Length: 176
Image (tube, rainbow, N blue to C red):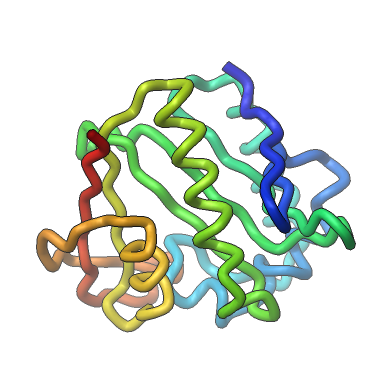
């Protein structure tokens, strides 16, 4: 099933295209502040953005991987990305996201992630999700809690390409 386009209040969620490489690089891949608590490491090499786009394009038909490019409906600027995927290690659907620094604190991620999860729940039939964040990344924790997740436990958390090892917070959401 191909990742669809989802139109919501302020945003458009759409699959990535080859034309997004420069904006992905500028918006978040080259920003150490955005990468700090992510699994990946920032890079000054635009080839990393190209590799990211190529990987995402290869996953468009995967029934266990749904990643959207978050785009402002008016300006068409890319703000970030949100992902719903089946986490084989946890045997559960998982969420992940990142947002360009200049778009932090405006509610975009909660809006985008809620719409992505609603789609997956309605179309794929997912009834349970998990999420985690580095304990220092309180903004990510607020997004997860606004989405209705419940804290379960602390876990080891490796981020920034393995450069940071910290404690993570693990959450679960059951949809009835």
